[in-house]
Length: 257
Length: 70
Image (cartoon, each protein chain N blue to C red):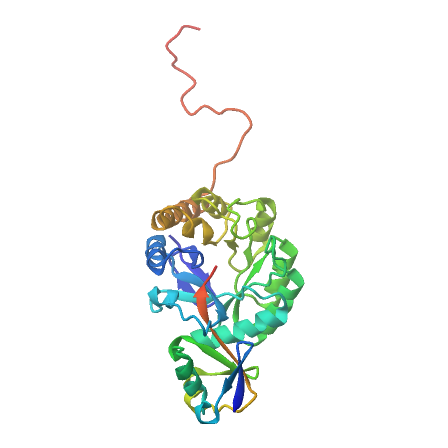
């Protein structure tokens, strides 16, 4: 497959994986491996000093995977900026998946706060990958301030409902001059394939893999779907028609007419 | 006695048990310094400076680390 280029980095895989909701670090590690992903997302939270659990993320080989910290939990631009700076201190790299989600029911991203935070973070030298609703104008405004990708949602986070925003995604993809990563709501490999077929540059999947009965198997299915969808996009889809168009010759039938 | 606010909760230390540096505090709490990021009164402290960052009574410390997430 052709390479995915985000900022100054090249990737072979077009599937990004979230690390949330896995039943154990072992299950998570095997799913990441099976997915072929090179970028994995993580969140930043307070250390629970009364209950030191094992470090779930110790299972991730940081020389093999790019750890992409998100700003989940942030409800304002200021909170997201603070989390981004902490994440940079933790990873030593300046990539951040910017999420500002004040609404706890649908976890929809706040466009105003996201744009505000993106502007500040880009000026501070961050490579910003903002999670957004599928809004083509917001997508343009974010590109104007210098984000590295846009990450529009297919449907609400963890809902597994697929590309409910398809028409708006198509406009975003048509107009984008940075990679478009469809994030959130992809519940099945066919959803991921559909996103790639319409020209998305990559997809991010978490819940659909982490909560499948066999996460590693589902991760592999998503890998295949992303590759199939990308290849189909590059192949150029055949035109749709309303009426049938015979695939077999319309002459030489075994009857006399 | 000294008081430090750690992740929003006040913790009291006897004078002879008061951590001198940020690294001392992590050791007392049993927190692995390799996986943690610290903010001292709102300012990020780089991991390399944990051992040289002194603590004073009344300071506020945030200790965060990566957890699984999308």
